[in-house]
Length: 249
Image (tube, rainbow, N blue to C red; front, side):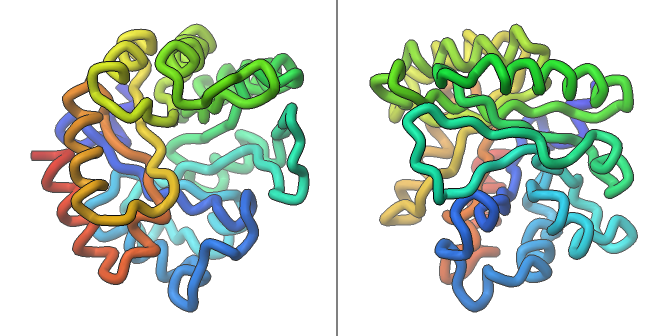
């Protein structure tokens, strides 16, 4: 099964580093602004994948040096547009991702946006081509737009998770409801599509992060897609090691 390429003991942890595209360099400090530093963390053995846009992959992911699987994000939008109905369109092809040495590709769908059909149509084409080339397909399933009252509501997230399954995603990246009991319904709604929980903004304490990791496993998720809570930490490797112990056993 292709999805096992980004899992260890049936669980996984993806190091996300597409923030420069989505937010600009505002999330970075002197260390994390350097993609080479991030790649070394990703290749530490604690992560089952590293996520970035094509430019970062082209210049910093060395397939002869790194063993961590590469997941290339195929779409993105900048933070300059605070649109109520967001849209994120493709900027990298599946063919380019293959040439960069990718194991998988990622694509955001803003579920509920007035533009969701445009993104769904692009995702469908990407999913077909990527699977034909043996790549894993991960859907960033993010409820957004005026039709969405809350992007952490159980039923809203369950709908987004189900859409990922219906579209043929191997895995989805999705927000957490905040408790294991309600999130278990989100996971069930995804069926056999694997669920990675978004790491999100840096938590106030490491204990809070570790508790969330335990809770999402209890709910049935396979793991985390995490960025800032690792590379904004004072000691990123310590955080990664502890999360690995929780996720992989």
